[in-house]
Image (cartoon, rainbow, N blue to C red; front, side, top):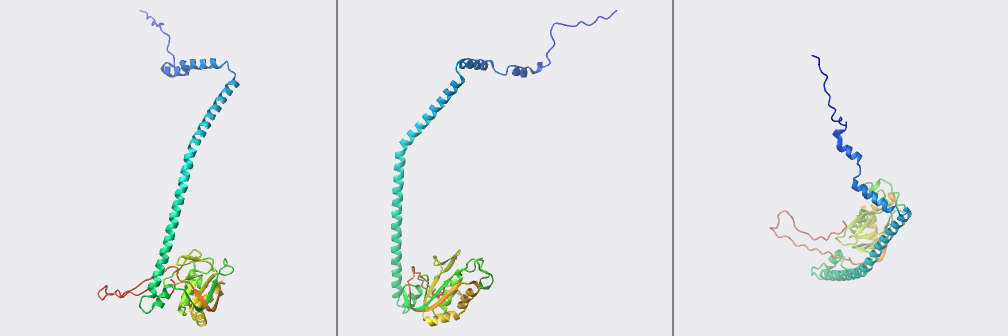
Length: 310
């Protein structure tokens, strides 16, 4: 029996190759929503009657009007706030002036109290009943001193930037060794004390048994008060003997070495009369012997009346 050919169906067309990507196809073919497209077309139709230059001028005018409104509002706010700012400024100035006046009054009060304390200390030193009032007053710098003595003027070298190495200042740590240092003044003052000086002052600053000579950078401080060269040292004592004894001492020889090695200048001369002011502030210390059973092995306390500058 002969075979019949298969019957083919022709009822439906074949599927599209991109049938599985219908969503992407729809997006590509309709990139703009129909509603948006209609709105855009309507706007184009409405603006088609106005020239482009007119539309630009209208936009510029609108921008200028907006800017003018902003400036006007800002100016009005500034005008309203101006009196308030002026009042606050005046109040601040008044507060500053009042606080300054209070600070000045407090400073005046401190000065008066300091003077009163110094005066009472001086009176206490002069009436302590120990029989050594003059010595205690002298060491504490409580009173002015005048009499014969010496004037020693010490100054930096002429070329203070060209100090060399070696000598007694080799380990100074300063590149400029032609300047007078604080330890130089310490040795000078201690040498004068050891040579018989009864009172010493540097540039008008009276030294006491508790005075300190220190350095702050290149500046020399005496009791925290800065000095500037040349340094004039006045010492009360037997002028000729004091000058000779100082120059023959180890500290006098040290000063000569500074001049020979580093060019530091100095001159010393006896004076028939020199006047030293009282110390600006007094520090009075007293000592009492310890009891027999108060801290064995600790020794007894002593008064700090040793001469010299640390």
